[in-house]
Length: 491
Ligand code: SAH
Ligand code: ZN
Ligand code: ZN
Ligand code: ZN
Ligand code: ZN
Image (cartoon, rainbow, N blue to C red; front, side, top):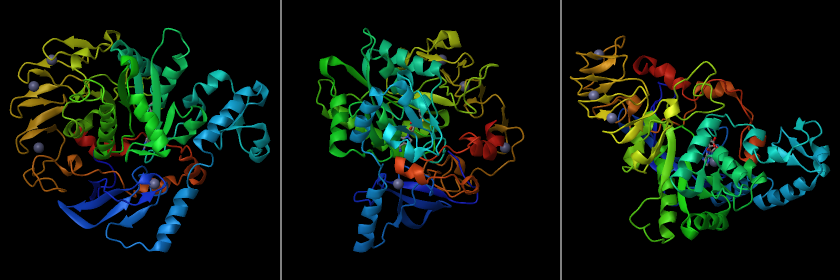
């Protein structure tokens, strides 16, 4: 996905490297700069989780010799940048908190922390909420600020309808355990229903947002980094996850994940494969030649890159909606199109999409499709990716967006207003033909120091402690830069 300043080259992920140095977010990843199809300059290690230098400024050249003193300092730094309370301490604090009468239950908004009366003094000049009810404690995603720092956390919470839809879908499919990776709201919905007698679904939340450890026990939440498969809680947490994946009583497991859209698809895929591996290693009959069922929620324009990593996956037409996403939520005035989809390794025909919302079953494709998605006789498939009706181009031999026309000098379809480019020159980044720089699969396009970030200048001091950054007044949605840059092409 194209993101960032056009004047810089791309950054490619070389991969999680054995013996990579660690930052407070676990093992770092190895990156390299690409320019005009060539690796340019030295490879370097940088933080896997934070795509903003302000959140984690770890940097080391691959071939750099690091002195003992610097190593020791780094270890000390990593230690001191862990959250101020451990998960265990937070669980104990929660127990004390719920014993308090309502009038003594305070939540500090500044520190994003439940306060015990002895701590009020310390937070006296912070804003806080009073009378925290049990209902509020059961909906931490409403109590906590969504982290909207788009480079690092970008928390976009599911709209109720989407969350309910996902839960109904997976219970109808017979799943009784949900590994919720970066889906706190789905986890919360499942937890809140757990007290109902006829509800038997359980969930384990894996998320980098340590604030959730204030509300969930070690069996319900693991502090986890999905870009490097790192369990902050070490072997004990890893074990919790392993046990959860071990299906006793034939309770089927599904993993649901909704990662930040910043790219690094390959890093995510590598972690998800490790989680799948954990599932397989439980040694349950039937696991050895199967994959752990999974829903990976991600924008449709990442389809190629996801399918490259997971050839067994298919993209569903369902449009995932968010509450706090400026662009992708349903307005009161009607439906806005969301580009976010479900990728799954389950058979497409079993993913039943709501007919009330206009989805219909295509008997030829054997899957549910958007109302506007027409079956193309020539492609023999329902070809729309964005929900609008696409049209077939005989010259391109495929369906294209409704706003595109075939351009004879470019020899492909594009917007009528496009400026013709020589396509046989190949991709500016990797040199291969068939795609442009903006679609280059070898580039992560994520880690940049763009003007955009410099302008923002959000505070992170306290955030670093909690593993979070403060809510930044992020008005523009995550895709805004791509939108601007590719407006002509995309429309
Ligand atoms: N739609 C989901 C939230 C998705 S937002 C819901 O409503 O439940 C992305 C989520 O991934 C956030 O919860 C965020 O804290 C988490 N996240 C971001 N970076 C992460 C990382 N490196 N490792 C694990 N989780 C991460
Ligand atoms: Zn880091
Ligand atoms: Zn069809
Ligand atoms: Zn077609
Ligand atoms: Zn053209």
